[in-house]
Length: 350
View 1: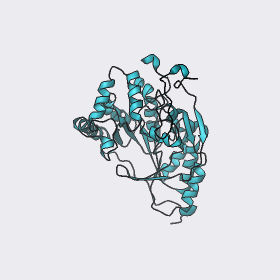
View 2: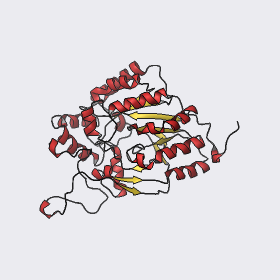
View 3: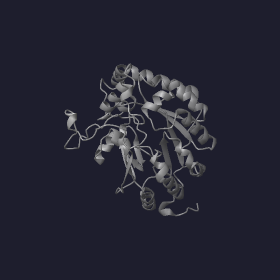
View 4: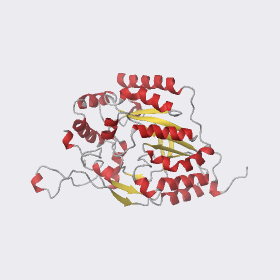
């Protein structure tokens, strides 16, 4: 099974897009002009959406505003819930999600237009709510860096969640935002086991690099927390205490977690992946994921989808609570300042 694994990619096939009228099948492979799977080259598609700030009032997340400079993600995490969103662009949530990347080069200009006329409640904007704003494409396009410059210019609060060490390239801007109490950064860590990390999220930073990022940000007085997400029962859940211990020792101020959920086509992609990579524990992992989500791999139930329910999810919640109390006691992530926003781009004297 290991020999069938496509190195450098999390998903190992292209599943059918449910919005597509036609579907490629392999019942008669002798009739195929080319293989349907293999290691694809990454291609980029330029897009200018009508709006750049997405607004959500999800019962799980509350009022949230976000910007996604990219759709699709080169990180290739096998479990990624955002894969389903690629179907709306006409692509598969499998290999195409991590190899066909939608780029929004005009995002900074659109953000500036948005902030220059915005008169509503100041709600911190998250980079990114769907795909990682510091995925490898950012090294080339530098959209996130330009967005941060706009946030600082308008003194508007921003949050970042990433699993890429590329964020340190923009440390100068992060320090400026932190000096005005406008920034929160969260580093996503799923596993400290490099073999698991490399196969599960192949193009992310290593665990050691993520720990180094936390240390560097903390040392620069940039508020940084961590998300132990997703927690995968039977594969990574046992690492939770060590992850919280290691990240706290590097200066993280807070921690959160979320259980894995395999919605839509992600279930078939993840099943294919885990049977190829960890066949000895695949059945156990899938059974434990289902045990946390009412016996199903797919879970869209509000509130339950993030933390699960049942005996196993309760144990995971207790382990997290105990570990956080032990390693993060007395630490506080500072609240972002919403009073500095320069409405209309104007400087405020008082």
